[in-house]
Image (spheres, one colour):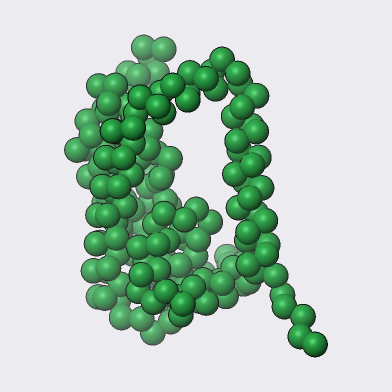
Length: 189
């Protein structure tokens, strides 16, 4: 177990950075708990997650804006989800840049969808930095200050390992059902 914590101290920030490029919610949550346990530094973890999260969305926006043909090949199967992202942009406006930081499943689609429009890059970058700041503070500090219950939950899952797959199936199934319903083709009468 001590080797695991030693490896986290050595490679944890690199893993946090790489994972945060595409989201990072779980990694920052884990870093907050490990910071509470004294195995990582909270300020460094939050700074790494902030930079990676903001950079990841800017890269997605940039790729969608200037490498459309390459991006369209990769997201061809996800056209309905991309259309949902456009609908959400119209419904929530610029707030969607903040909302997407907290909603698993649309995290990568929103910057791509925005990049495919004529949305101003500077405005996106500023709003993305502000949103990444809010996301980092909420998740990083939230996980740090709620570490006790999270550690207890981890102990419970360690004692009763059947709970973890059950939680994953419920969460994953709920997300899948939502995305299926939200992107389902409407039949006109």
